[in-house]
Image (cartoon, rainbow, N blue to C red; front, side, top):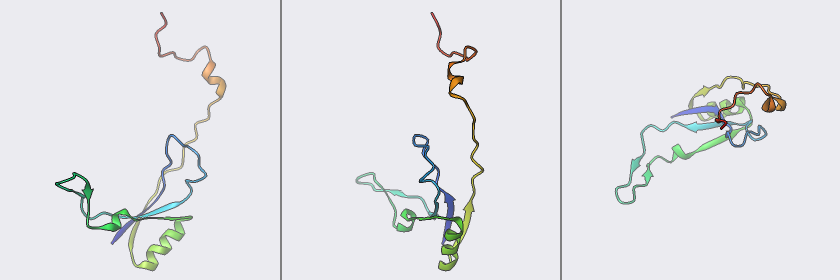
Length: 102
């Protein structure tokens, strides 16, 4: 059994960082889902592909995987780039206009 430990990616529509501080442990799916011939729904006999565990820290997720005897790999993301921009930049006269003025 292999698991992947990663930091939850925040939604671009909701950029708040309060709920994005956890780490997720997710089982790797060994094979692809199959389509049901009657309904067309995707299904699998392996229910571990649906399990996602959330931990407050990376160390807690690693400790859980080691305690359960599960092989794991950590997917790390780079630091978040902060783009500093002033609200006044939206109203500069030198700002490039994309719409055509007629």
